[in-house]
Image 1: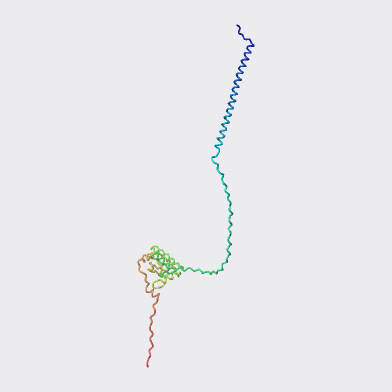
Image 2: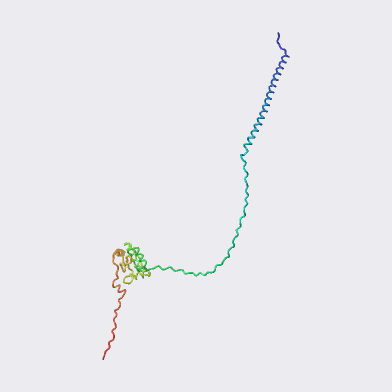
Amino acid sequence: MDLTVSRPVKILALVLVIAGVGGIASLSMLGKSSGAASANAQLSVAQIRARAHHTATTATTAAPASHAAPAKHTRTTAKPAKHATAAPAAPETTPAATTTTATPATPPKPKPTVAANGLPIVLADALHQHRIVVVSIFDPQSQTDAVSYAEARAGAGDANAGFLGVSALDDTVAGPLTAALPGGGLLPLPGLLIYRAPSTLVERIDGFADRDSVAALALTAKTAAAYAAPASAAATAAPAAAPVVPATPPTSTTP
């Protein structure tokens, strides 16, 4: 038996096979498209519901718990400032003319030149500071007195005594010093007077005395007796009064 298939049959079989494959493929594609369309339809509904739910939730969340009442606007009316009424100025009064009498300034009182003990004030002040004070009397116009003054000052310094220079031309000091001399008389020129506090004259030197002599006299003056004016000086200072002789009445002679 010959099983050889003719050519036309082969072509017909091939066409049928192709047609069958094409039909199956078309059916398969049709089923997929319908499934996709239904799926798309379902997703669209789900999305619509989800969106609706989301919108409702968002609206609920965004809504405030309580509505704040709008703030009340207070209307403040500014009161006009009160204008202060200035008080009328008091009329100026012209002061009455006053006559001022100038009081003359009181001149300062002159400083005393003599202390209560009769000594010059400068010597009394020196005796308040030193127990022994050496007083040098000099003539400022004499060169010899200048040497005596220098030696007396040096000797007082060696004995740690006070020193005072007195010009014979200075009446404010020389005058009271002369009046305070025991027994009266004049100041030695040149010369020395040595005083012991408070106001005792201890030694008087007429003429020049060197440095060493002045220092020795100042040291012994601490315990020496007070100076006593000699009788001759007292007699010279105050001459004795002449004796008064009573007048003798005239005698009458009887013849």
